[in-house]
Length: 110
Image (cartoon, rainbow, N blue to C red):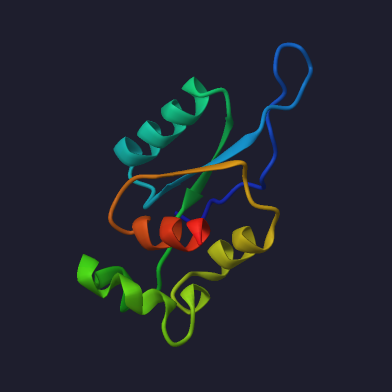
């Protein structure tokens, strides 16, 4: 789960770069494939973003998700690889699937 590719658009058949979309998930194939397929169907170049939350964050229930933003911010809960992705230019679209991706998607929306 440590694979997080650089954000680059795939060239279209016309040679133009498509806008990018982060496919945010825990890395489970079923969840990631749904995000990627939706991004491709919408005309975006999908970039897998596998959420790698540090313990104890990955074990918290949904009602504890606001804790991701307080008091240390979301970066305190994410792996170094995820933090590097957040430091890059953000995508044109973010698609999230799964419990661990929801707090990150909410953070990106804000």
